Length: 121
Image 1: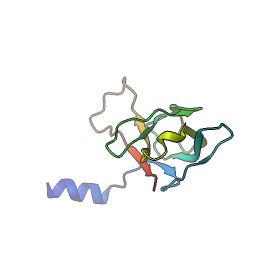
Image 2 (image 1 turned 60 degrees about the horizontal axis):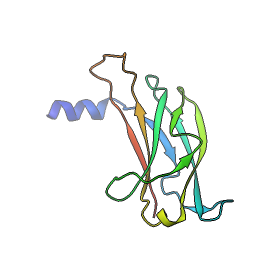
Image 3 (image 1 turned 45 degrees about the vertical axis):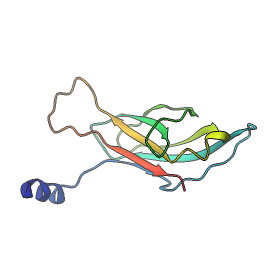
Image 4 (image 1 turned 45 degrees about the horizontal axis):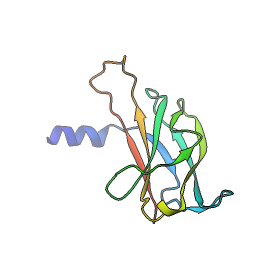
């Protein structure tokens, strides 16, 4: 166990980033719908796709609309996107998350999927 912890501290784990860390819902151009604007950055050479989701405090999915639910984001690429939800779900929505989607044809034991979540206040 000590070796594993040392290995993690010595090796720099590269993942993707999603900002803002604490997004806010704002009115959209559609009555009864709110939106937030997010930005992602891919720092992983081994991942090209990320899945987006909106969740409540128990990590149960909340319906949302975005241009992307599955994002193609190549190494070192940035992407800005909007996420829309029903105004009635605004109080329940706690997290917006992105999860790396690993290629199924790659059979590497060291492949690690990463999940990044931003929390609504």
